[in-house]
Length: 370
Ligand SMILES: [Zn+2]
Ligand SMILES: [Zn+2]
Ligand SMILES: [Zn+2]
Image (tube, rainbow, N blue to C red; front, side, top):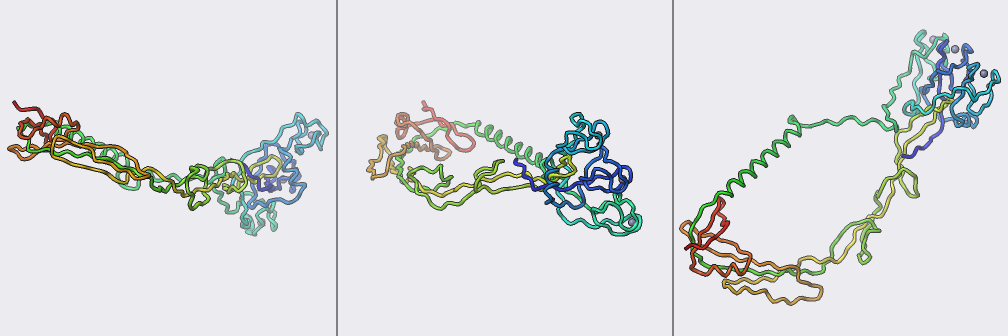
């Protein structure tokens, strides 16, 4: 995912000595003059405003501040020697950076009511304008959205099941029912009865499937359409999503969030992805499809294939033959299907056979009766 910067905002820090709220760029407390200690944390102000001041932007971009190893004074990332004591800063401690502080607070913040005197104060006021009391314990009503590493809102867990019975139980029930059906089928079809029958008559059917070239409508990405196809309507659709920007791509970004740069400023960033569009089209191609059947039937033992006269753009596409023997028995009429014409010729009219009949009244096998 691509990180997109929306700019920088000034963070704030709370003086550990007097609880005064200080702008992130201040190196000493505006109220009591205490230097900012190296372990103080930067916070998001109640309302974050993207800064326009070039000098502040440069400071924000320069990276985490360095605290002097000797005197503890805070120096910019670009400084080589301490602005207070002149010590070499190469041994100084760089502030932490990169922590996600929360969703970008771009909405107008409500005033802070002084807990001591009740006076409404600006959301960024260091102390109460009326009585000078600290305002850091009276936080304005800000409810930051929960954010993940990427700044996206955390999705709420979905309900596991909508009904009273868990889905797993239903699945087990269905599987069990299916198993019982299959077992019953195997059991019942396995039971056969022997019946003696006489061949009453026979029928054969021979079929040839004829295919023709017919127009078929299909859909595909434009570059996957065969050259001979006729292209119909096309519309741009999302073909893939990638992390890097591209010409004509649609940018999809998550909620902006603020990252601590360690310089007293936060960078407001957004995680973005890019949808690449492409033409998805209807097209028509000629394909072989069954369009007709030639079929003949007979009641003799000389089966024949139907005579074909194929027109242009037609072809034969498969043959099928079926031979049926019709038996008369004391328990009614039965039909037995044979695949092979040689086996079929054994069922001369009037011959006697023993039929294996299962519980579904299907003849599963026949043997000559002596
Ligand atoms: Zn202070
Ligand atoms: Zn120093
Ligand atoms: Zn007050």
